[in-house]
Length: 157
Image (cartoon, rainbow, N blue to C red; front, top):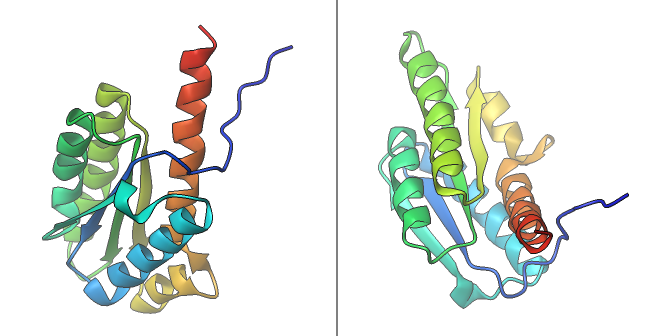
């Protein structure tokens, strides 16, 4: 039996973080968590590109362009959406998730989902580095694993 798994070693890999500026008090914590994870797993600071976009809606577009550049092994998508009193939250959350997934499938470059979708501001804060962990860290860890998994799959042909 052959098992292909991604190792949690970021050395030599190139990453892009696409970070929404909307809800910056939350997204800056996600960004810090992602950077901490990448660096702790061996990524060089010079191998990390941070691309800031206005809001979550713009994340899939920037992620798609970064992956098309051929300059990155994985893209970490970071944002924070908090439900309000209108249907806006549902529309944005669904389209951002779909856009990231479609971009990853079309490009063949792993893209991870570190976009908080919370019912309340308290839930969002919990997921941006307090009692529920840091979803930026988790998305970066998944990006490392997926980039290495791609190497394993491509190398097994």
